Image (cartoon, rainbow, N blue to C red; front, side, top):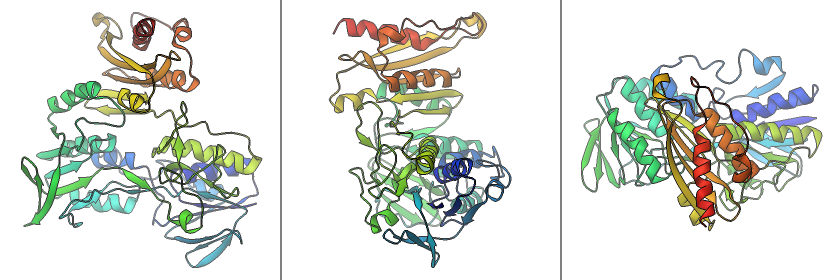
Length: 441
């Protein structure tokens, strides 16, 4: 079988490895416009910090592609997908395929601000060449404005502070940070942590224009002006759908490539995965975008299984999980925010809960939880957690409860472990409190 994969990001790489495990004889070709194998944009702030200096092995160690007989075509753009002939035109050459995977990724989304001219302006992306250009520039300056307070924007701000920048502004057009992941009440806790650690946070920031003069960038806001050396956009991304759209493959309502539950596009021999595919949430099935490396890896594996073995694994949708570190605090979320749930017409109610994971004598620190539940079904719609303790297990627990639609009265009866030193599960306390809200409904 001849398999072509357009895009060498996490989804394409995972798909290629899984295909090779399942089919030892398949001919696998991966095409990438980039000069090097791409990486996840979430890695870039940590490279900026100096956490690591060698990109080799970040995703696949050693000679993964060579050892698995996967042909990688770098600096090779796919210009046409000839569906009737089952061929792709890449770098001026023609390649036949039996099955094709679109792992096209996404392109940085830059807001339309008057005066933005590309000089000392950078957008976070998965292109290593862009990172190297940015890194070479960062070391020569001492001030920056980061636009966008998603995880990458916050982590980039932290990285620049750790690099010794005297001034870093973090600007967000919304009235609170992490607007797609947490509600305002939880965001306020994180914002205090950020401000206390020395970050300059500007919310509800309306940038009227940018002026470039004397090598500086001057941002004109409604109520002030900021002068910095660099302007960094962490303002999200748009699915890259160009080759699919040109080939007549159906584009979904969100502007990403429409797929069925087996990740097939409107052409059953062509699959779409990762950032370029139209996703849906696991609870309501509402269409959404999910531009995350975890989704790319999951959908890459599923597409590979279905491509080789037939329709064996349906993709259920995203649980919208999220986790990051902010100045020594872990922040995580699952599912819908309360604001989003209500906008979707769900019968949502919420509780906020604070508890020590274990007693102070054992080093216990507060865990802040917010849970959103559906009164009608008595199930979880979303959860948000902030703590200096590790919260990964709590987020995983909430993700399973959310995805499986487990009634909270049932989950509350399952024993969870306790030790004075390790403590208990604060999420259970929040669930018990949420159940009392259901009783009052």
